[in-house]
Image (tube, rainbow, N blue to C red; front, side):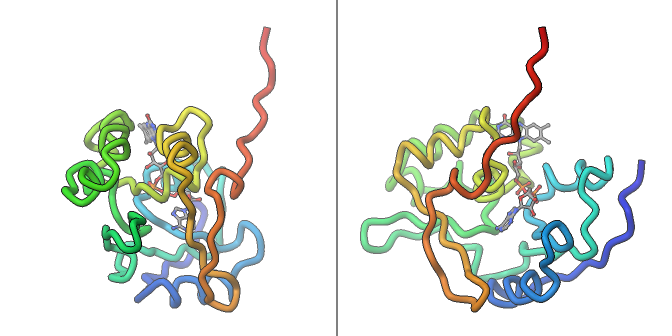
Length: 165
Ligand SMILES: Cc1cc2nc3c(=O)[nH]c(=O)nc-3n(C[C@H](O)[C@H](O)[C@H](O)COP(=O)(O)OP(=O)(O)OC[C@H]3O[C@@H](n4cnc5c(N)ncnc54)[C@H](O)[C@@H]3O)c2cc1C
């Protein structure tokens, strides 16, 4: 199957992406594209049919991996393999680098992002449990473009699975 038609926008920076998502953001009508490892198959199966896709991977301000005030920051455009290989991550929080090696296969990690994994909040995923263990926060831009912090797993409840006997 092919994805339904959508418009594509490559955001310049985080505020630009947040603004586009806000303006077009009726629920389900616009969504961010990070590494595409979960979104692209969902589009192809037409499980998601957004009108607009906002690509955040060109946002330079979402690419950093850094430490300040004893907190490790991993930008939303950082791919899983970058986190896995980062000296900064290994020194500041080796659990993250160790856990990333268990996510999928290298081909997926070369495209997928650390933050995309948190947003997906798959109950079997490595990153949500690591984030919970480390008491991590997701920094999200609100509708006015102002940052606020949220615990990651509260952003999306896992879908209830039907019980099969
Ligand atoms: C074959 C395969 C095996 C996998 N195995 C594992 C595994 O073992 N463990 C594991 O944890 N994961 C696994 N995954 C999932 C993988 O880690 C994905 O990369 C991840 O779930 C989504 O990250 P992404 O960057 O590709 O996000 P995308 O696919 O681009 O986006 C996923 C969703 O999150 C939203 N989103 C992403 N980033 C943002 C953002 N910054 N702001 C707002 N919304 C955002 C998108 O709109 C979309 O709805 C697997 C995937 C595949 C294809």
